[in-house]
Image (cartoon, rainbow, N blue to C red; front, top):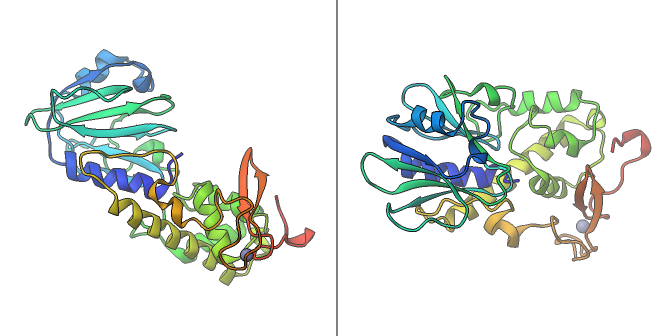
Length: 286
Ligand SMILES: [Zn+2]
C-alpha cells in the first residue's frame, strides 16, 4: 500500500496535469475499478462527462480529485493503482481500466490497475472533504495538524506505539515502512505501550515520522516525471535511504547490530535489537 509520500507525489503530478481541465467523456474499459459506483459503468461515464477538475487533494494516504461543482472523485490506489497522463491516441499501457478524455484534447488521464483492489468512485459534495475520508485524522503535513493534540491522543490510547502510528484516525499517512523507520530514528521498540511513554518520547516519534516522510517525498519529487504519475505500492526511490525496513540481517546504520525482522499484525516489523530494546512487560503492548 502506498503511504503518504507516494500518494503526495501522485497528487502533485495530478495537480499539474488535470487542474482546471474539463472532461469531455470517460471510457470505463473494465467495470471492476468503478464497482463502488452502484449505478454501474454507464452511469459513471454519464455522471462525469462535462465536469471540470479542481486541484486534487489528499489527507494521509487518501486521495480525491475535486470538481469545481463541489463533488469529487475518490481515488483508491489499492495495491497497484496508478495514474498516467498520455497524449491522446497513444496506445494504452497494459491494464488501463478507465480513460478520461479532455475537452481541450490535451493529454488523457488513464487509470491503470493490474490487481484492481483499487478503484474510482464519485463522492457527491466531497470536494472539500469526502464523507469516506472524514473519520481520518489530519496528517503531519496538514497546515491544521496540531502536534500537541496528536501526541496527547496517542498517549491516551492503551496500545503499542506501532499500532498507534498505523491507526489512521490518530495521525494519518503512516504505514508499515515509515512507522518502522520513525521508531528506529526515535530508538523506540514497536511494542512500547503508548500510555507509558513520556510526552517527549511521543513527540520524538511523531516528529521522526514526519521527517522521514518528508525526506521520502523529496526523493519521490526528484525522480518525478510529469507525464507518468506513478505509485508502485512500495517506497519508491526512497528504498536506498531506508534504515531498517527490508534490511533483515544487515548492519544497523547506527550501531552495526544486525537488523531483526519480526512478525507483526500479519506483516513484519524491522528493528535494531540494540537501539530499540524490548520494553519491560509492564511497558509493552504487542
Ligand atoms: Zn542499532
